[in-house]
Image (cartoon, rainbow, N blue to C red; front, side, top):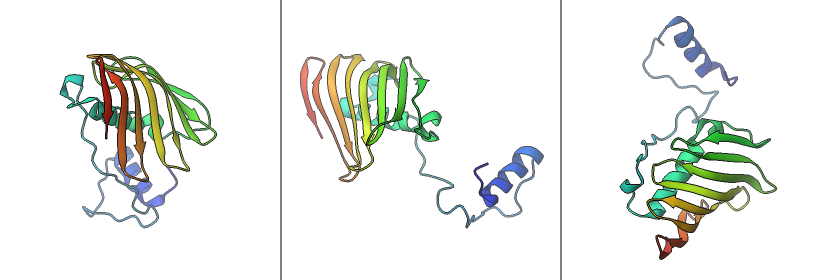
Length: 165
């Protein structure tokens, strides 16, 4: 229903009439390459499965951006959604891109995030400044720099200083 005749026709035929396409592989020229994206495996549901807090934050960031409300969002107004293991995530527009707030938001048991962050469209930098509660408590800053392809995590977690890349 996004106004692209090729994929829409096949999907509607299948969903409404149960009709499968005649050929197994279909190339939709009017849609381009955005019909599918790389497979994203399900994340761990328990924070004990993460090797370190940087891996936990990488998973957290991935899961929040894959949440349907966010993934298909227009960022014209603030939207709040529940996180799978408790808490809430609010996202919306900012002066430079996107703004986020988290209230005990957990995408895995034992790793609840409260704080704020954002994504700057101009620089390609995604940040979360947060208090983390669960298996260990801490105050952390997570940065994903899309233009450089890097991740970093700094702060304190479980009583220890964290400075990871």
